[in-house]
Length: 186
Image (cartoon, rainbow, N blue to C red; front, top):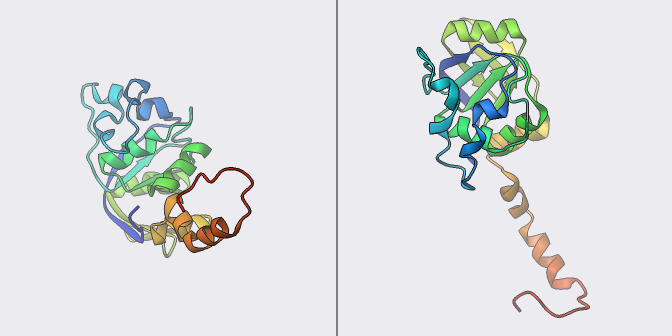
């Protein structure tokens, strides 16, 4: 996963609340197990509506409770594959929020008025190191779990975190008592 420090650029606004994961990526597109190729199906049903436009910008703003509904890691995959690097909303579905952070899609919680002001500004900067969103001459702080922040800044997904302990894992495997047949290479 790519390290995140600052995400800057244009903002795309999806001014809707309670956007669930089935609206983000409908179930009929969940047949892949790779993380790529989902972006073309992002908001699939809405994208068919006349006048729909959602530019591929680095920052997406939305209404409260974004990513609610069923647990599917495909939703953040689709958002990321479409081109968004950060989603800013007043609140997120819990599982969706955690899935975003695990794949390197920064989810930022701001007050609704600040989200609307960022959307109206049309461009901004999300600074993970400073924990600030900057736009239109304003600077708004946001909270994030320190461990999630460390992982995102370091570009560390679950596999990378595990690999950091590979020496300890190898030592444990070499030293532990085995009572059954050997199932690993010697």
